[in-house]
Length: 214
Image (tube, rainbow, N blue to C red; front, top):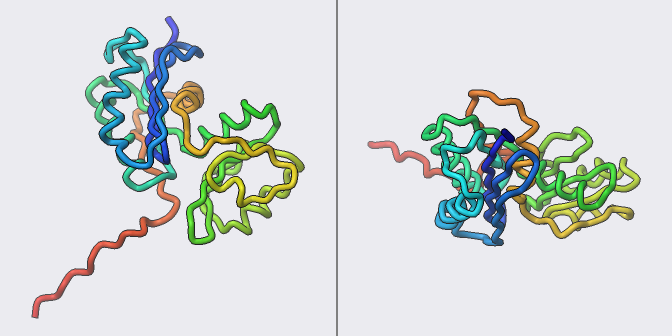
């Protein structure tokens, strides 16, 4: 029987969930949202499972994006899927948000190389390519130099326009789709290791310093 997999994403400006059986999408939801991922995720997962005609016990594998992304968004998806992993005793695979976006851009464009570039503000971007460059944070200028080595490529993400690549194919992909999280997770070897959030930069919020008693 084909492997049945549930994948979710909550890292950027969307919330999505997908159920795969083998290599086929049997149910999918994708909603653009900047906030409210925590409230939207559970009903969305219930909807795709109902549409797929599956009980949670029928699943063979789980998948989730690990980041980078918003601090809250990353934790919403990971916490939800970690809970399912424990409750169901199923393996959970982690996929970076940028890898999922780059894989979709590669497939949609038909080109040989794709990159996902997210505007991280402060003159920096999060970037990952399908050519073996793992997710990192770097300045816009350094990212431009990195991508200039490719004569043509597909670009996804909110920072794609910042790259100013003369022959890039810029696609309207600004958040991961759980469909591509599932596709990539299907090729990841099962392990008992629980995925952890991928933080490429320290959060902007700082904890207050302790006040010393006198």
